[in-house]
Length: 286
Image 1: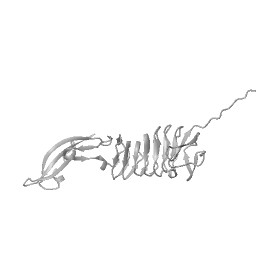
Image 2 (image 1 turned 30 degrees about the horizontal axis):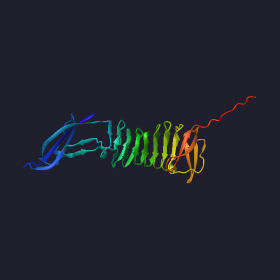
Image 3 (image 1 turned 30 degrees about the vertical axis):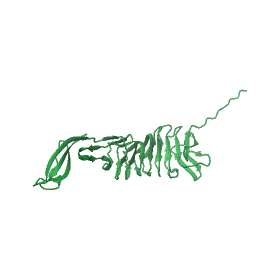
Image 4 (image 1 turned 90 degrees about the vertical axis):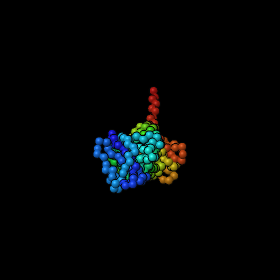
């Protein structure tokens, strides 16, 4: 934890002491030598009238914003507000930014994640997003920028919707009961981490990643797709005949079960993975 001392000043003229009507915030780390206020003011002989002083503690590694109206630092004196959204562009290797209870995050910067970005139902919107090798996105909500992923993206607790293209050498994971929705092209591997997870493909023909970790109850939701016949599973390749042509999906290992086709409640098709039927053997007594 780092402690900073904030000082609030009003600027006055140098000779006649006329009020300039301007205000100045000075911040410096506690225990260190103060800044040169004359240099900050940008003028010679300017007099600073000290109005207010207080201390603020800033977390170095973990920051949690919970709720749609939460802010990092609000300095209410004279309605001066400092919001982290417009300036934060990086999560360090040991950093943790948690946006919970519907808290969204929006800025126009490119964003780099080398630590942990936790989402709790809000929308994360930046110019671009890079998840580095040590980085991770965890939770549910909406992520709007294109993502270059070398780390891990894990859907947990609800629907994690990635509306932009997903590229890179990283991996994505779907926890039990969660949904990962891919809104654009992706060639990244997807792993199911438990039963009744859903991989929702808004553009199924643009998905070319390898799927792994299937358990009975897991679902591949083909949005807007109507099948024209039964699916065909041959080894580790699944072929799905549709009105727009045949879709092909690849698996890390040959699934031992079967895929059953169901409506997804909208205009698409769910491929529900289940255990293979075990034939019943009838013994005959002679």
